[in-house]
Structures are given as structure tokens and as C-alpha cells.
Image (cartoon, rainbow, N blue to C red; front, top):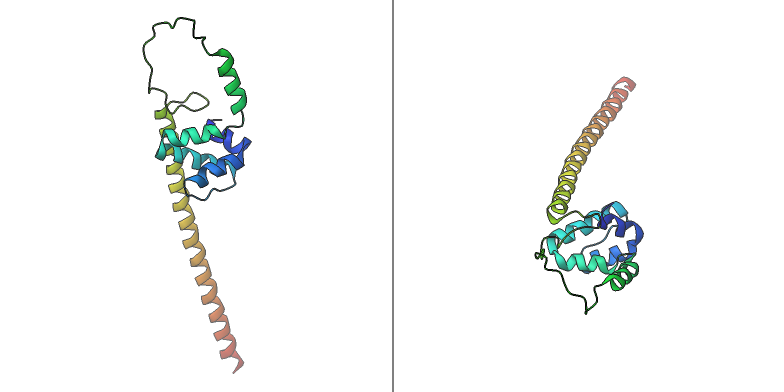
Length: 148
């Protein structure tokens, strides 16, 4: 379960507020909400990610943990190479930005496939409807001819 799914399932009202803050209508289904959150991060980057984390159901717990485990001012910092910007968009399960983008692209592909499938079903239904109408007209015509 990634960050978007977790927020959508555990705090759907907060997820809905984030989506609505971008002027888009949020769908109450958690799976769709998670997809919408991922799309917002893909489109708006850090700003959307910060909005999502602000409605994270465990925000207080995470904040308290970081406050307790934050290095004290007196302690010396070890010289470590800067990792700034490498994990700006990582999700709760540690997926990096490239992985998140891949997931969003997969979601888009699935939506396109679903839309094509639903379009073919609509065409199939309209063909069936036309055949039923033609059959009904033929029966009425046959009934009129045999009656006279």
C-alpha cells in the first residue's frame, strides 16, 4: 500500500479536500481517490505532496517521532554526502519519484484501456438495440399483413 492509498482509505475526507483544493471533483471511492492523489503529485510535485502529508492519518505520530529522534544541536553532524532532491517524491513505502511516475503512467494506461473497452461495449449495446427495433418493426409489419 502506498502513501496515496493509505491516505485515501484512512482519511477519505482529507484526501477529498486535497483533490478539491485543486479545483477537481473528488470521487469518494478510495481506489479512485488514491489515483487522483497520485495524479496531483505527478502534476503539481512537492506542493501536492505536502498537502497530502498534511492530511496523513498518522501525522501526529510521525511528527512526534521525528521530534524525539531529531539530532540535538550540541551533537556534531557527520560528514555525509548530500542527498538533497533525490527522494523528494518518495512514497510511504519508499518508492522514489521514478517509481511513482511509473505507477501513475500505469494508472493512465489502465484508464485508457478501460475507456476503450467501455466504448466498445456501448457500440455493442447500440447494435443490439438497433436489431431489437428492426425485429419489432418486422413483427408489427408481419402482423398487419397477415391480419388483412
